[in-house]
Length: 262
Image (cartoon, rainbow, N blue to C red; front, top):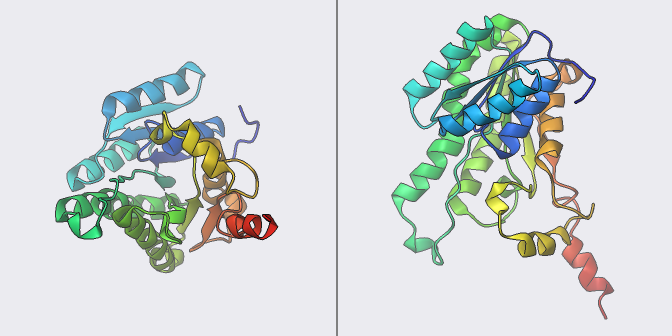
């Protein structure tokens, strides 16, 4: 457990927090003193994650929230405010990624809409619902989880478009919210070892070689970046995208390798 407690007295809502980056973020913020509402479309898994934090003496509650449903988002935000008396931090971690069809033209409107509705529009719904409470707190912060897919081509057309949209939403919402004292930022991860990669160890080993720092990310790497941007340590930072990708998008490792290969 970290000894830093930057979030004592803070009320925090994390979406997509049953597992992976969302769960690690909920854990990190709770370790730093926050009261955290662990939300996820899978309410049972959200409760397991929250219960594991409570066993450690941390302040965590669970709530089922499907960010693709406006009423569900409104209810989750209201529940957080009722439980904590304040909402100081919103973390948008919920996302949906459907594997691409072999040919782009074989994709469907339904698949495209689902990825965007959860990943981009879902974050927008959460921001809309949370913003008045973040303003009222006097120290409000929004941190969204983007992806390097939103900056370069790593496949997954709809998911990538949604993550790119989150970068734009971060900029525009930061400008809108700044006069009211709310900061809005985004963390852009590279490959992170989550359950999405379960059973794909060989692929991760190959991907690892593309990372200048010699490894793929862990959920805790992203959670640490979120905690920084949500804290007063980042009090003069808004509208930014913080790349946390082991150097993937800064260094063309494959190019350098090709130059060194006889």
